[in-house]
Amino acid sequence: MLHKIILKGFDCLKSFWHFLKIVCVFCIIMLLLFWIQNLTHASWKWMEYFAPHLKTLLDVSDNICSLSFEFFGTIIELKYISAIIILLACYFGMNLVILLTNIIEAGYKSTHYICKKTQEIALNKELRDSIEREERSINKYVVTIHTKVKPNFSHKGINVDLEQQNGMMVDFIKNKLGVKPMIFEEGFMYNFDNYGRIDSVLEVLFKVMHGSTPIDYAICIQAGDNMPQLRKLISLKNFGKITMAADTSYRYRFNATHRYQTSQIGVFQNGDKTIEVHEFREFS
Image 1 (cartoon, rainbow, N blue to C red):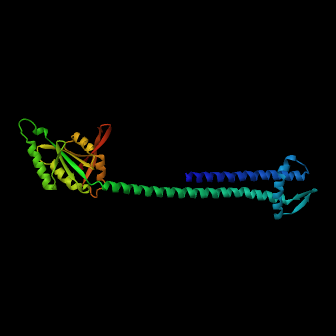
Image 2: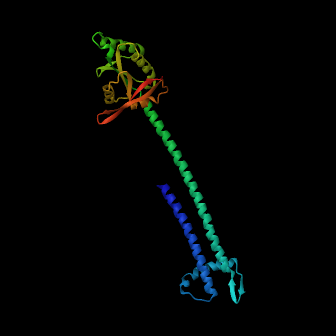
Image 3: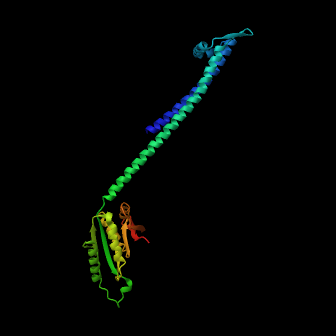
């Protein structure tokens, strides 16, 4: 608001200088007419209003140059020429003042722009730091694992004990990570409290997925405590993938190390909202 007022002030100031230039031109014209009136010994009624002001100007110029000479019986007073020179000097002086005003205005605009950009940079940095602090504060996360028999092992000729396979998976993860699961949404849920070191957990999960077992795994990861979002991820049944929502993927950016990459799978309907689903992938 103040910036707009200052810019408006510069515009008004420049308009005022241009107005003074017009006044100078007007005064020169009136002074020439006043001189002609005096030379011709005429008496113009409308000139009586301007005469006092013009005489004041002539008094000032008379102090500068009071010479006069006679030309064909007519007294030529050089104070009129001095007054015109003064007015012309004022006229061209206004151009210099206008130029100076433009320079000051340009300097102000440049300074304002630099200050604004500096403030924006500081504000953006503060915002980034705030977001980073907020994201890094999210450490708790859960991993859910749901399993099913692979299609090529599900025909009648092969009998796969899914419960036994699940037990082997649970034992493997417990041996590698030292955690036990709880049953959640007909699957297994693991709770962790250090998202900054999720890479070590992902390493184990990818070993589980790439194992030679006859079952497929749908693994979901949710940072924080958004259980409705986690349930939606589970319902999508992305077997063969380690999936997460956009917020969990975004949180991964603030980890010190990134041994895995993330990519978007797609956007899915979640009630009256949508959910953006990403996955962890190994670098190829």
